[in-house]
Image (cartoon, rainbow, N blue to C red; front, side, top):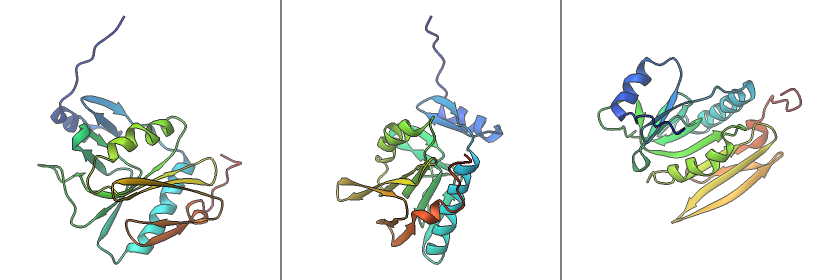
Length: 189
């Protein structure tokens, strides 16, 4: 038997999210709990954050991880990317100071439960954001990074394995895959 659930308004979502002890995505009226990360997932985020911070600390960008909400107006989605880089000044969703609109780079650490969505539906949604220029999909089970970057109206793909250097296109930063995977032991995970 098909059960229909009432879609929640964005206002209802924000009211629930403020009180929630966990993070939830909002996808066109549905509230979806987000899964927790593994130690490897969190270590990769930390490694990436530190490398980005060192590279752009004196430049007009902000780096945000996991708990910063992003609003995608064209898709009616509120989500929490693993890592976002946003050029200053920050743009906020109307009436909010906790939900940003203008990332230039987004990175997701792939997990078995979200990898397909991160590559397809989520990437398609991110591409509707006018400021969005660069997307990294970082594997957590081997040294492998998928890099998408925008040139004009086209998205270009590059893949990095082992000990290669990823050159960010939306701002001048290069990060070695060995930096992202510093102290990651794939055998123990």
